[in-house]
Length: 539
Image (cartoon, rainbow, N blue to C red; front, side, top):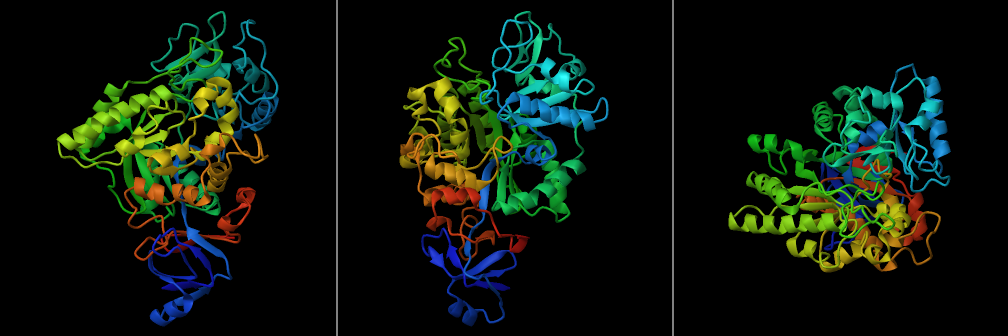
């Protein structure tokens, strides 16, 4: 039993907002209050002087791709200001690689590159997008595959496409596109499900390799203040997590969501949301309704500006999604659906409206369904998440990362309700915040800064922020990374607060985020992190 004292504690508990000491026994919090009282009550507790530092509930990233993030730490960082710098990094890696070895990278975004791509019409590509021949020039002896920042597009070189048997006659897969030049040849850009044509031929890391990568990523996340995540990767990620958990190496609380293609198997097994324990448990069934803003595949009611024939890609309609949700509900599995565009969000809400009626008619549990991203929503649909009790799982850092693209491709009429977390909160929806890492940094303090300022680190676009009416208070944003994810995981009775009988997940900061300039949030990190009553990180 330990007693942490001489601290400034923000509990997130409305019944006791602040305190100076906390008693922890094994994985649980026993009491919260003042040191003199707690030392008198718990005479056997071992005192730990916190030297006036700030203690807060540990933060949870409610949308993170743990396998992809962990493995991305080994890949080329392609999030560069120019295409030339991205190519330079690929060339540098190629010089060290064995002939034929795959070169992998992540993070490029053609929309933000400062130098323009080659002009269209030369039979080598599409204006604004990179092309295979550019990778061929810097890595002539290796297949190259670089995923875009959005994870909804990829850039492959000629060797990679040859290994995947992609030719001019290869048809586009369902819900995907092989980008082609004016002569019909593949340019090297693969959108949505077309990415799988190449990714399927890349040697998969073993479960042991994934587990090792996740274990190595844990200290990075602890230092950022994260004590838990909601994972959106697939079967191999779950197998790696189970292995780590069985060996006592998992020191991060994980809610594991499952892809919709495994719904039949989950149904046959009778799996339900919440199965597992407090360290690793089943979440919801994850489906994709559309693509993303970066590759212009998010499903919209109106065309993208400057692309009058492009309304994005809608993977299914509300009726099909309802059928998935109905089957999942029969065994107690909630749904969580990726929806970026306003049409995609509309279709998801239509499906959820049917699903709520189905749950009521058949006396099934009122499950904690979610929409992932809620990135742009039609004004008529904005109140529906609260009305249907659907969790708005949003990523504040997307707003500051994407704001220029959103203005450029959606226009001000639609972006008024883009990344509109304050609108959702005002209507009464529950917010669960995350990062979508490795799409963005998993650092929650960057997300908190974005939520309260609507500005980038450099202060742009203005002192007021981008659509400043959507800014949150720090208290509201902090709940998005604590009690919101706890509710989404059906763990609000024991997670997200520093309170008696809650799990001992907490972080220690040298500066109080509730008493500092919002810009100081960008530099905050945890000096000590506790998960399940154990100090897992100390600087």
